[in-house]
Length: 115
Length: 238
Image 1 (cartoon, chains in turn purple, brown):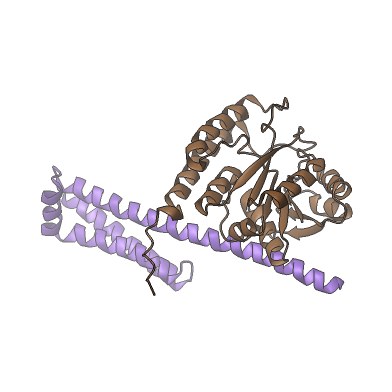
Image 2 (image 1 turned 180 degrees about the horizontal axis):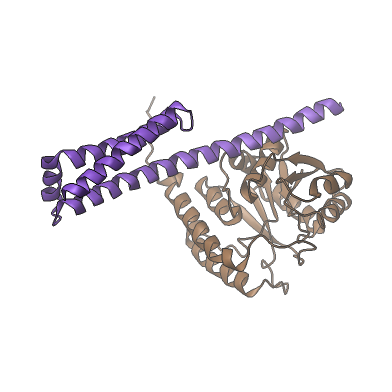
């Protein structure tokens, strides 16, 4: 159990570091890094604060703490995936609208030149 | 205006443009090139079409909507959509246009099944069409014989609507539900459909299942958006 929590702690810290470095190097925009940072911080807190993990285990009725930690992590990542799907959908809509606008403007520009 | 969405249709698009020009002389033909990898754009230009060249591949819905947006901005009252693969007979365009003008409905569909004219689709497509007829009947409140037909004419009201809201993938069936959302009307006129003249259909056997699920979801989402179901506050008496 302790070893598992130590591993999760290590992974959470690693994730925090990677995300922060990625933001610093502009590989990921700050507004999109917040979700990752939140997920890493949540995993870190759950790994280090045993009473909180125990409280969540009792709340969810799960048989043991590692399973609770695993399910909490999976839940956080599912929420993140959903959030990124929403962002992707917006980006795709914007991208299509922009592509259409570019094509229409090029059409108008060409028409003006031919006049 | 006649709009022709085209993606990799270099073998058929010239014939489509020329036949439209000969059947409805004087009507501008706009080929919307969905970033084809072949010479569709040059072939269409040489055939005398105006070109709307998309900067990257958007798929059929995005491609058609770009044409609708441009036609709306240019002030056209009626727009006929003809596929770039040569399946639609341009001689049917005047009939669709006449029905648009005389019926007052917002959309006219060129249907291969509106009358028993012996038209046949492939087995899978026939099954799909029957299935969607069944699904759409209660939603639209009237039967639609050829819901997957891409041979359609729209008036300015529908053009305005489609410029703002148009399904992006497999748009034909969902577009009917989008129309219904606004309580717009459509009619069908019998038309001839030919086998595609060149190239290959984008809908493969593997994609058919995805098509059905995707379109069903789109129909369902559009039904949920029906404006008639929203509660509007009662108007204040003056």
